[in-house]
Length: 84
Image (tube, rainbow, N blue to C red; front, top):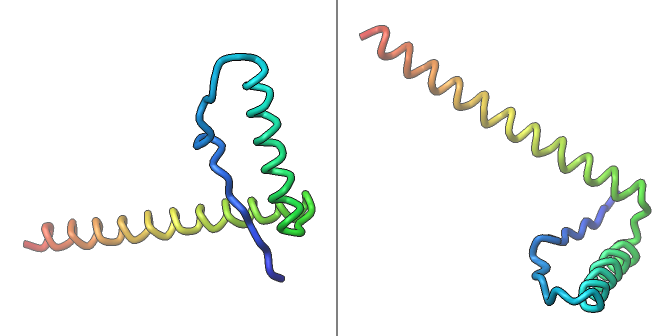
């Protein structure tokens, strides 16, 4: 199953102005962008949630593997120091 995931960094949307009208326009632009990316990808809401969950699980697995590798290297170094 092919999944298309579009990531939008909302933090990259810069503050345009402090007037209520422009703030409302910015909110509308962000909502329209999210809606367009959802429609363009062809994924349903459950598809997006599933894709986000899979991405988080992959990140957790990567972090766990990296932590395990660091621990193995640290234990090997400690064993070498202890043997000398």
